[in-house]
Length: 88
Figure 1 (cartoon, rainbow, N blue to C red):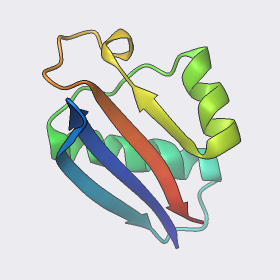
Figure 2: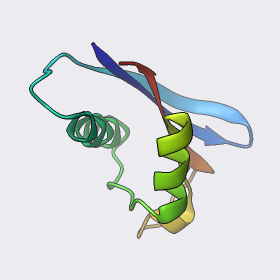
Figure 3: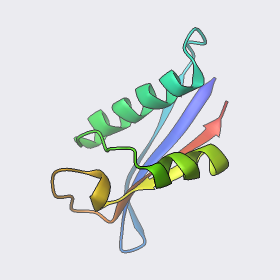
């Protein structure tokens, strides 16, 4: 089971979090990541963030990355959205 944890943080406090589970192993890992991120954004009522090179690098190394204001077109009312793969 693929599981991803998404959380919204502001001033070092957790505003909202969710865990997404995907059991469809016909998908590639990348497809699972994008599907989980889409579901997280839907639950938090956010637009999908843009992946910058720093996000890709962090995610490849740590299976975790943060999306800040630079990753969003619209203004956000939190410091960052963090996603982390917690089970593969």
